[in-house]
Length: 390
Ligand code: GLA
Image 1 (cartoon, protein in one colour):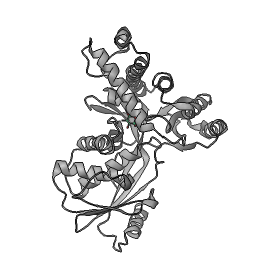
Image 2 (cartoon, helix red, strand yellow):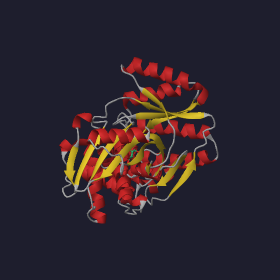
Image 3 (tube, rainbow, N blue to C red):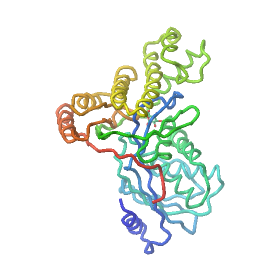
Image 4 (cartoon, rainbow, N blue to C red):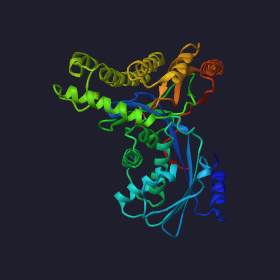
């Protein structure tokens, strides 16, 4: 979306004639290349920021009111609240994300000096597992940081974004999404240790391949409660292991150590959940190595293994994601494919030979429609920067 359109739409919605003082920002969505459900297990992730995301236009006000409008939720209209009253309200819907962010920033920084009007327009499919919510949280965070020159550390903003999700919204998610959105770098993956928050950028040299994002369009009903359930299953497994092992998280275990201590967990389901976390963590480390070595073939196999582990052990894929990924595996140009993000619907990603992309989209699309009964959507990913002023 270009900046002038964004400013014009802002002016129309808020009936503001002058475009002076309107400032514009962009915040990406993300995909995760590999390292799924490892973030809250103290492990590694390897996400990247997309060039799809959320645009925002903002103008300061003279009073302490905040008015927000999203082009993606037109029926909600302009939602209005005060900087001095920032409680979660179900009827405020999407506006709870920016509201939570304002609240926590004020808690750290003291009261902000003025309210503002904010117009938001996103081109990420909502609820598709591409982190539209983290995109919105970081958009608000960076806007406040920049327009009020707060000088906040970006990692601190990332942590506040996660806090909004955990405490304000009530989803017990890890740090990956806000980190990927806030810290993204063009054409790079981010290899992040979620225990220490140490990270490195891994340039993506895809040698004539594209990353295709496939949206299953499956509604992610109950996704949050099942997510919280998986998280607590991992915590239970960890506690059982900690009776004998001196570890902080499942991410501290090698595959061998895990296999040698299965008897401590006993419960079959908990063993499967923990196994995914431990093995996925190891796959993520191997994936970084293969990227650095330019070994896409190994990288692709690790993606495939990751999907199998989510299907068999973590049990978060479901018929829609499995249909997409299995159809993707059957295509001539596919190097690797897996579900990406939290699961229970959402998106898959596939690494595909650039010359085979058209055939890939046609074939996978047809197979999906035939089996599931409705269409999947396809996007060619391009990897961009984290949240920034535009
Ligand atoms: C969601 C969460 C992340 C992460 C992924 C699974 O996207 O928000 O913190 O746990 O699921 O890897």
